[in-house]
Image (cartoon, rainbow, N blue to C red; front, top):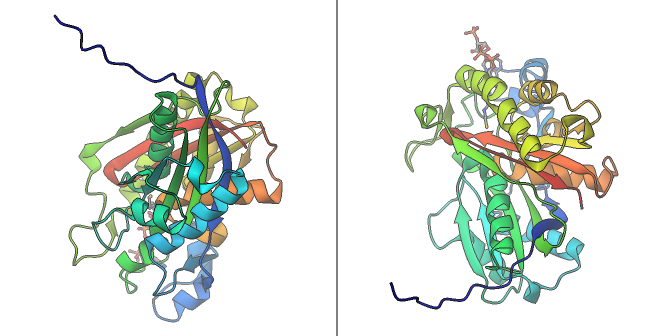
Length: 323
Ligand code: COA
């Protein structure tokens, strides 16, 4: 066979996260607010789901607008310039339109010139999928620095008379800047999906709202996800007791606590951003991580476990070094 003589770039040994950023819409909707129009109450929602209040985006705040705020903050926190970014990946499952990609629009608004840009849909696991993809791109030499964003406007896909969904989902965006490094700061991603449950959480078509089989999803999340989380620790070479933080997708506080219990991360702070932010799907992990860092809840440099899971049924987990 004739050799094509292709060259491949020099590669970084590892990738790490330089900084996180977040954006929460201004409008706060409490459980009491919801109880004015549907048959529910604050005590039921707190005890079954763990949510006290959530943020809902304004009519003129779409996926791009939310992503610009979070991405811009992550970029500012990273100390990099827009010209340093050469790939933008935006995870979303609640987009208002299928094209163009929201990533390209966010990049343009942030002054990032001619980056690779694409949207990624792995529902509530989207941020962990995007982070795994960003890490691989940096390590393969396809990008120097990547802006990873999870941006969701779940409110536009909710039936506000359906008390089994509208109490759960919410809006927001979170982001991270990924760069190359000698020391790995993003562990191997463990990702997968269980297609048998593809219709357990679903928006069947453009005229429909989010539907879910709540109990089936609850059972799946509390049994199938902890082994994925443990495998991510194992593959990163980090013992659960050495984790400083565990940041499961903020789906339901009872699911979060069940996963944390099974992982036995006895010294870890467990993210509970859901209490005030609701379930923001692919945005929930970077939103929670940003808040933990800003509050000083977690030490810089320590390992944190990220675990995304949701519609698909898709899941992904990796251990990161907290920036
Ligand atoms: N307020 C008050 N009562 C409610 C209610 C609400 N918002 N929603 C449902 N109920 C009622 C039901 O109608 C039912 O009443 P009934 O016993 O008279 O028939 C009762 O509460 C129990 O319903 P059930 O569905 O068994 O509740 P649950 O404990 O399973 O909680 C969920 C429902 C949706 C909160 C729970 O199943 C869940 O969180 N599942 C996971 C969903 C999830 O995380 N999805 C996102 C994944 S990314």
